[in-house]
Amino acid sequence: MNSIQGELIALDTNQFIFALRQEPLYPACKILLWEKLPQLKIYLPLQVLMELERNLTMTEMRSLLVILNQAKSIEWDYTPAPIYLIEQWQQRGAKKGDAVIAAHLEAANIQYFISENRHFLTELPDLPFHVLNSEAALKALLL
Amino acid sequence: MNYPNQSVSVTVMLPQNVYQQAKETAANEQQHLEAFLSQLIVDGLKSHTIGKLWETVSEQYRDRLSQEGTLAQSTDEVLQTLRKIREQVADEFYSG
Image (cartoon, rainbow over all chains, first blue to last red; front, side, top):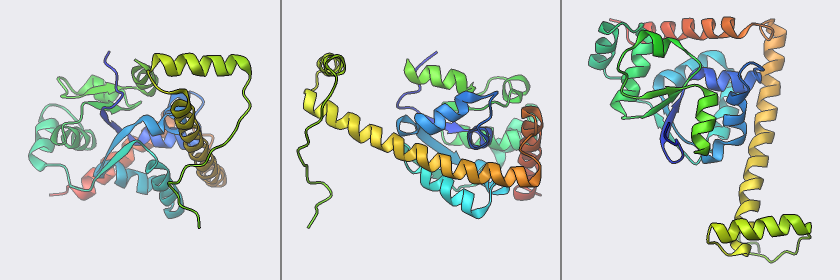
C-alpha cells in the first residue's frame, strides 16, 4: 500500500456521516476527519455535495463546510460528471449512483476513494482508483 | 495595533523528557528546535479548533437524529439509506 500523504483523495458521503454520528463500528472515520483533517488534501465531487445536502440541515451543512476548509487543501468540484463516463461505468455493471462517483473520480484523475461502501470493490472491476476504507486510509496516511 | 503575522516571544516550561524528545525529533527532521516547537503549537491549535467545531456540529446532528428517531439505526441501515439517496440524486440530476 502506498502513502496517501500529499495525495488528493475523495471521501465518500458515508465518511462524513459516520464522523458526525460518531459511529462506534467505524471509529476511523471520526479519527480521519476530526484529527487528521489538516493533513488531508480533499477532492469533493458534486454528487457527494448533493448527497450531503440531502442528509444535513442548512446549518449543519454550513458548519461542515467551515470545518472542511481547515483541510490541507480542498477542491470543490461543481461540474457534473461526464455523461459518457457514467454510461461506461453503468455498462460495466455499476448502479447509476456509483457510476456517477466513478465518473467524477476518473475525470478528475483522483487516485484514492475513501469509503465504507464495499459495493465499489465487488460490483466494479478495474477501477482507475484505489478504494480504501477509513481504517486502511489512516494506515496509509502514516506510511 | 496587532499585526496577525507578527511573532511574539513566549517562555514555556516543559518536562525534561518532553524537551529531550522534541529536541531529538527536531534534529531528526533537520529543523531548529524553536521552529519545530512553534510549528507544533500552530498545528496543535488548529487541530484543537477543528475538534471543537466537530464536537459542536456532531452534537447538533446527533440531537436532531435523536428527535427524529434515527440515531439508533444500525450501520447497515445507515449505509442502505445512503445508497438509496445516492441513486435518487443520480436519477434526478442525470435524468434523460
